[in-house]
Image (tube, rainbow, N blue to C red; front, side, top):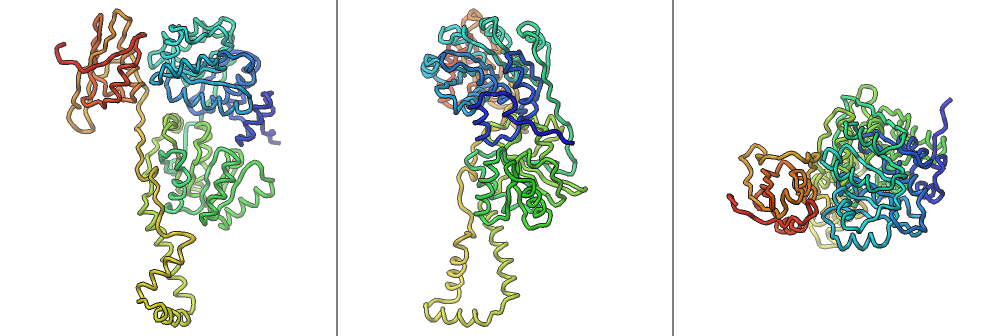
Length: 552
């Protein structure tokens, strides 16, 4: 007898938060959420060992929000993250989950954002502060952030933070937090520094380990496409029009999303049905039977609804919404390539989710290949090919005498030749479903940055070559902060890489002197980047970076 599925309502979360997750369409907690929420609600320390992308943000955000005192306008939860991108994501998640908590306020704090704006936000007394260690420590030294009311300190992706050289900042921040505070630490690995922190700063933590499966079928082609959220539906429609497939399974994150996608695709003329937790068992079985029998070609499902789905004709799986963790990804793509057949899996990733690719590749031990988005011309060509096939079938099967006579009558009556009439008929016949694909600038001209690897602060990168080319030309820059200010190499590498997005491979030789430092950067750095770096703080002082001459 199967065990009943655990729901968020079974975890003793505050009712406004249960209401939110229901509205978001989350059907059941992920493993890390089911394991972490109860001890965090009890006020226990938690050590979560899990890969990136396992759903850990909700695992700590939901229980901590349940314990927030909205009448106290002061920081009660501090979340430290290794990058500004993750700080923004975590802050947005808190805001989303707290939509039914009146007066709740969260603020992300990270380098590159104006201090004046951060001062204003902190002065309002946010309930939750999410930030990078360097900028958080800076506000603590300025007195603009007070940790005396902190009830819980969260270290998110702790091993990444320490690998980036933030160990001193992290320990300094923890030392300033109240001794009687709760702590949650999430890490993919357990290096010695993490073990040291757990022993020194955590009180008998509940240890949660989330293991991921480590294999996928070799007969499944795995690709990904980077597309902003606003353009995802158009990207999906293009792929469906140009990919050759038998049956297709599209995964969406929520029940609401399955319904919306089904309606929008049906309006485009696709044979599609949804599969989600709102459906009765009878309706679910009827949909699966239609998919197996070929009455429909496309099913849009949530993870829970697709459990145990076994349909041999599924040749393509599309992850429209990125899965909650690597294990969910493996389960999803396992719905194709059945019975020894080949299959294909496409993963949609928005620019801020690209970090999750590394987690999937590590779990599956397979490389995901970037997929080229079908172009406007490719879609148009496919539509014309399908139209031509239908037209040929009609001309072969239907009597033509009446229409041939009508053609000549219309030519005489309208005063047009055969080419003009044919063009008009074609135009009229495709009004409801245009033969020419619509333009979409977000899909035609993407401007997304390539991902950069984890930053190794404390390492002195050397000038690198372009792909197969000569060494990149480097220019020397002077920074008006030196060893007398406590400046270290890792401070410069971290500031430049994090603030500009520049891959650390492109940071050259660094030399630190008592009152200043020099660093080699690619020649021709954009002026707005240099202006931003001038105001960026390292070792508590603005860099005031400027072009220098060799030999200075």
